[in-house]
Length: 326
Image (cartoon, rainbow, N blue to C red; front, side, top):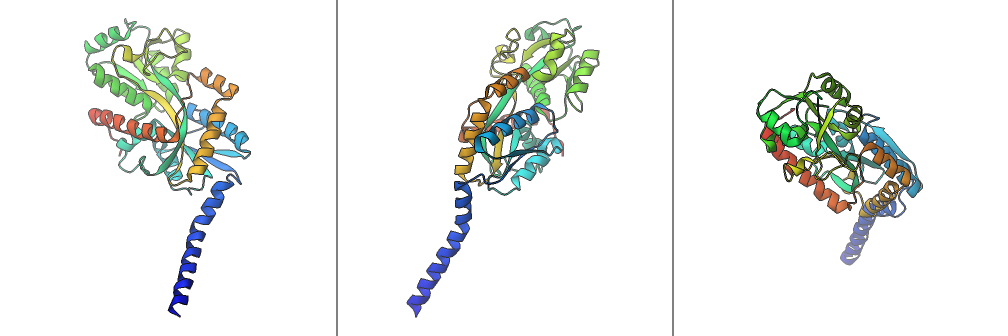
């Protein structure tokens, strides 16, 4: 009798385990069977949204399923990423993680997610330089000249950005720290008003994305002094990188794809392969080039390490600038 009970308990236990892992294994093997939602934590129309939609369209074609982009802006990108972290890890909800999120890890006491444990990385989408531009009236034409000009006027130069805590703001703070200059940050609600006031001379300079700043440089309304990436941009080969004057400076506005933690590796691999295929499409390559951004090959594991490295780098900058939002 005891042996029969033991046998029955073993069978029941095995049944419970099979029931627990069976659906996930089945879902992973024939995924995707229905549309996949892509959460973009910012408003439509920006570079992050455009990149997400281009990737989603190509991934849908590669996997034979619809990828639906859902914009969930708010709290500097935190609301959308928090929603992603709380989603089922079955591969049917993925999202976009950007430069803002490693920064937000330090700015917000409760961002609603943990970059080390809330997500499974899928891959890197694209990155682009931030451009340091100045009003044409400033008597500077190179980064060394600008640094000398700023040092002679501590605290008197105003740099405009598209908002507190985002990549443009933090690029400016990191520059101030490494160049040992004192400038006043003036945050705006977006790139357009920040650039408009820089053109008008309300602020002497601005840190902004290439897609926002370059047209005004080309029109002669602003002067390009430098880009923030380690190397010069192919779009502006005559504009030096900050790293040529301040070695080691390397900041980009980037984004990539992640899924909720625990998403099966088989699904992550399928998503990554589809993303790589989507980014290789000639139309996507050209659109990225037009935006001044480039894709970057990075396996999921490497992208996860990159995210955490970014978090540590921005932590030092946030602490040095003594910035906090809540």
